[in-house]
Length: 133
Image (cartoon, rainbow, N blue to C red; front, side, top):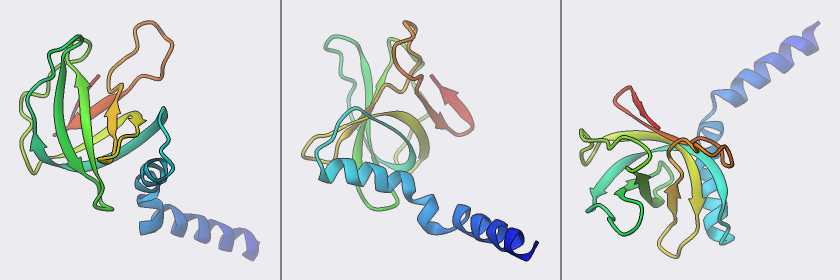
């Protein structure tokens, strides 16, 4: 009985430890250092710069976020398939679920929308309690 209780305490400690909270940052960081792309990731970050929209081909709202581990990522949010985040400002925090693509500047998060063809996991961005997908 004591060993089961200790296992649960250890598990709870792992779940709420800072290492666990940074595990998604670690996945992104490992993908960056190993030049991996097509990695499905979930994370959060602070908006540090809002860029102009990319209007070539599918339109994308673009902004740069900083993760807790200080890495920066470009977020390319397809606004032909998902709603634009009109209220987004520098210093706002977002959560995301999308696909990481490697580049030498840190990487890009995209596929932050539903895949209406059903070939890819649905992605999203959460900002101020609203989910954009």
